[in-house]
Length: 322
Length: 216
Image (cartoon, rainbow over all chains, first blue to last red; front, side):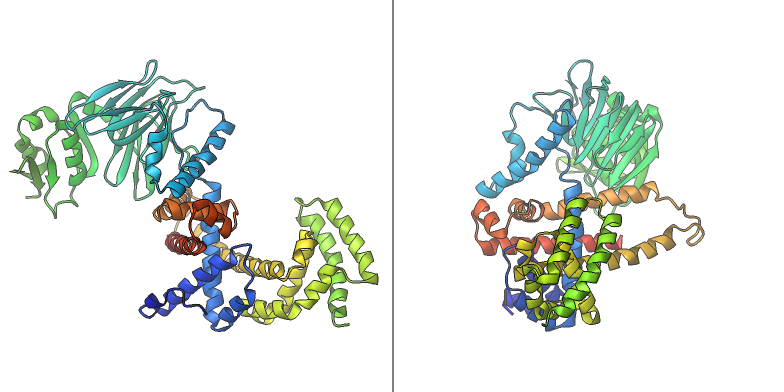
């Protein structure tokens, strides 16, 4: 059998070595031009574990490929008033065109968004908020440290790339508002909703109306007074007091079972002061609502509010457990 | 003649297939396939078709392959199933090529493996979803379970995209769009061995993500 990467072989666990060989053969037999079935037979005959490893690999690759075919890609930013067929056509081209271009020209796929013309980009510095008009009767209020991209041809379609924003959307059943946030698609059903992108999570809270999360996949409906948290790929829906949703726009910060790290991210966005967490204090979780005015003028007020220690380090403040 | 036994057995099997096809393959153009089968049965009495000749000529090679591929003692039965498949596909012109038969045999073994795994999973799932078998579970799949299933799609996409745009594109062009590896190489302006090594990486990444999904 061909030594296709001989140097690594010696150090490998035998199973791993067999799996590598199985992958090698799977690639070869998967091509319609493959002819060398007798050599493949010899490989299979040389060890009864080979057939099992090959079956397992082919079956796993087949299952995973099936999923890729059933759900081609995460939904891109597409004008929401396109009819379904156009949507799917664009969709298919959506991954293939850019990916092929990337393949040919050696570009990274992320560059593709810049190719799309005339999108409007709104960025807020830390500590500063902004209200963006999204077509007739709709707005997005951006917290500090936020980046929102609105489709240049359709204000009913936008992408929240980072940060935190409260959307007040005039409902139009024929032209729903569609937001992509950290890979999830949110479609409004007449709505005020809050979206927050954290380091490892996405928080969506609905104050009025309802939002559909990923209509092409999970299709979760979040009603007023509910929120959904996506963390490590799992979506959890919880009930929330509607009054708390979007409270940050009145100069308050509200946390629900948040880690100190998430809290410092929010505080930094809201105040522009660089807060960070003392290593070892990350695991602590807190719920509550604090007024930001006093924090802005004296970060030390956090000590009483959160029960932590705050000390100035360089340009910023470090929070730690007592 | 060496092939007689096979032809006679195949004849009986074909009648069984005829009944089976009515019941289970609504996607077929039934009338056309059954007419053509009838035609073949008539033909067979006088002389074997070229597909039969090719199949008989490759019988030993196929048997050896199926045995090595894990069929063991069942290799003869699997060979019969393979014959039924080749007939049902109705693509005699392509099927006379030994590589086509070997490929069909390989696919058949993968399908057998997958249905075995599926059956084992169903048994397990049954125990898990029976009320009372494991505490008070509901017989219907829970919302969490449905959501988790959809999460897996994201994991698969991420695993593929993590390999970089070239490898991800090569995988998609070959496995999803069905483009032969040589053509994918030309399209992406890379060598065939680059395509092979990207595919190998993609296969390993997808296997790994699938193992994670299976372990839940």
